[in-house]
Length: 131
Image 1: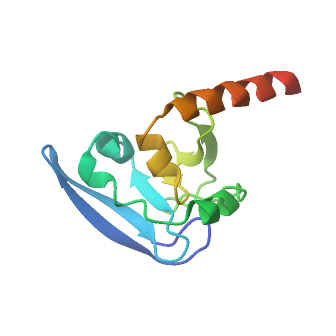
Image 2: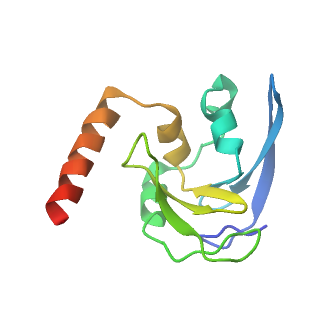
């Protein structure tokens, strides 16, 4: 599989959980992560998944500007999505196959902090102001 952002190859990484194994795909270059449907949610609360998002968040922020990407499974255009709980986290998703997170986004997705609550409030105010 190729990374939908930088087109480098992606490697499979399997994590063992009490509920079974979860295999995600990680870009060998930009370190973005591909999660098949349900995998990100399955790993969100698991301590052993902390190490999978080892990419540089500053690279992830640059990659996050690339929005016109295709699903690595079906090659259809992916949708820009916002996490409903942490609205500052934006990622791409394919309704049929899964989601792609840039480097640093999964770590942010896993760990909601007081700063995230404040950031989301500011993000909400800026969105409201644009309308």
